[in-house]
Length: 87
Image (cartoon, rainbow, N blue to C red; front, side, top):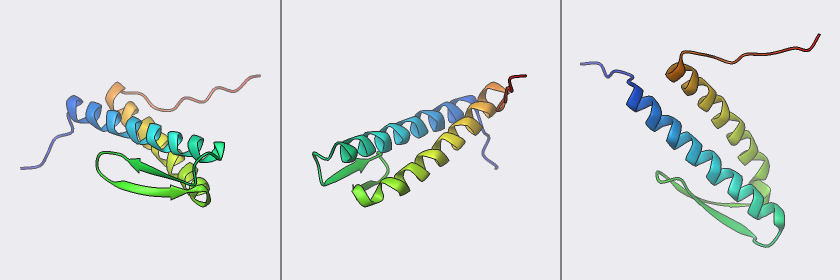
C-alpha cells in the first residue's frame, strides 16, 4: 500500500524543516559572534558539531532548507512561489 501525502504529514515536515533552519541559523550566529569555537547542532534526528569553517556549508544547507520549506508550503496551501517585478 502506497503512503499518502496528507495535510498532517506536510505540516509535520514543515515543522521539522523550520526547526532545522532555526538550529542552523542559531549555529551561524553563535559562531559569527566569535564567543565559541564550536557549536553542537541537534535537530532531533542528528547531532553534529560545527566550527567557523562550516559556516559557508551551513548557509548552503539553510538555502536548501528554505527551498524545501517553500515547496512543502506550496503543496500544503496549493500555491507556489510568486515573483513580483516593479515596472
